[in-house]
Image 1: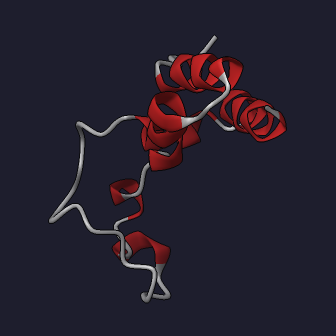
Image 2: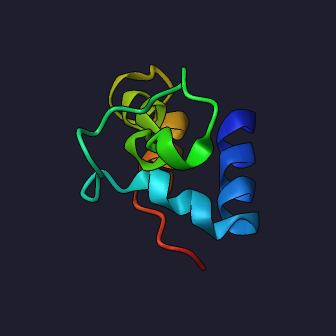
Length: 77
């Protein structure tokens, strides 16, 4: 729950991170290039908060699943 709270605070503080929640808009081949030093060509928006979908669907604690689902549908406040 603490890590999900951290993610929520991060989304509120840095709205541009919200792009990681959206899987619709991907550039190029959709592969993040961690091996590239230049962030402009690393395809940063190919990454996503895939962990949230795992927590939403597979975590044993219902509170965690609920909060992960809420964050997955986060649209700013």
